[in-house]
Image (cartoon, one colour):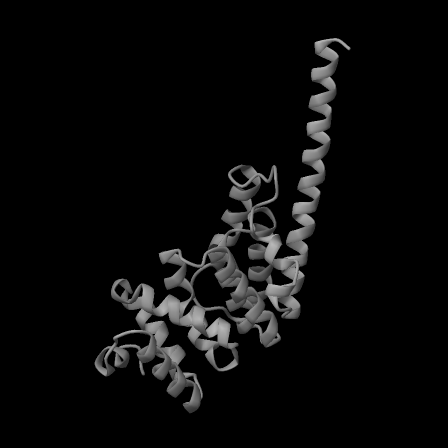
Length: 217
């Protein structure tokens, strides 16, 4: 076999394998999205593997991502009313189909589901995926703090540890806007939820009552 024919066959094989991996990547994303909608335990579902890496060959920096992100931009901040949640969910999900590692969009998807009165397990599922893809990113920790506190009453012990990590790891760099959201979130908790959150924060860190009062505890 000539070298040219060998190179051609090798190139075709690589293309075929790449195409298969892309298909599997998008299939994995669908599993992750479906898992978050059903509230499946992520640790025991394909959703964990689905977001470990973007699909091979995904155009994460190209025109598709730019276009979808541009359409989703108006829905990433500000309050969500009933007229906006449908288009917002579609726009955010479209970004995640191209860029499943975009943790900020998982946070927003959880917020959208909460605002639309979605099943609480679907809200938790999207929140869990935001933690999974960016557990130690400072910006992400700040972004999901209020959401994590808002969900505190219904979170598992493991998920609560993530909330505590988000709160304590970036405590000294929290901007006023995030603090204001945290005050609203703590006010929405049950009395037992507020009590357990405060106790767990004090047990995990050296925060004093005066400091905890800043976020409404």
